[in-house]
Length: 250
Image (tube, rainbow, N blue to C red; front, side, top):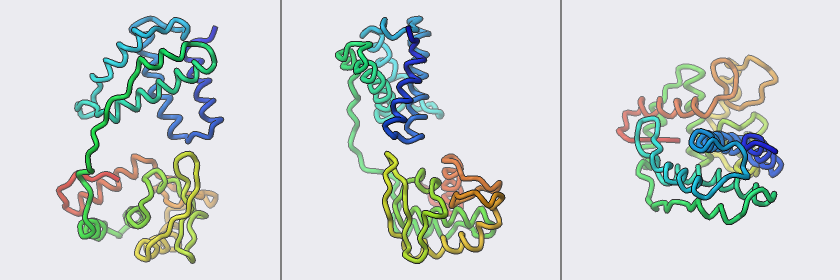
């Protein structure tokens, strides 16, 4: 008889077979580990066959108590990410015949309010922000090139840091982007962003390159691909230098 932990490992392998992204799988793993901890700590449950609707209802109610790192209540979208992870896991188990499918209905999604973004920058504000990023070091020039590229193309933060040198076509001013579900697409790059990007590739990036086999387009000070948190810090630094009094995320 398999434990819940073993079933979680099987489920994550199943997601890999469906070509889910590494980020999605890692996110599901973290949320399912929390769910498993709840089942063991609260109900001493190790085997999925004994899972009951009352256990799921109590877990669902406890989601409203979740807090962010800053101590604020988690929004409906954040709570729904927990529910999506667990429902997906339970559906997998139901399809395999280990639990009844109707138990999944115990976990309804929260209604998410439809609101417009509050921190969208105007064109003039964005140009001001970009112009204030210093270009006095390889790292700062990298930040300018990354944000110019993001603003020009509209690609996601994870897609920015996932780019390789071979993904950039300087002559045709395009980038090959690997998006969600490992789907590739070609995006055009504006002249200003391309000018910064070409200078980065030809004149600045070599100063940070430690390994000639490293294919990442953007590099850190130690010559490796930036992490998502590093990109967030680059955005925070740009906002600080700009003097804009707004909450701005990638």
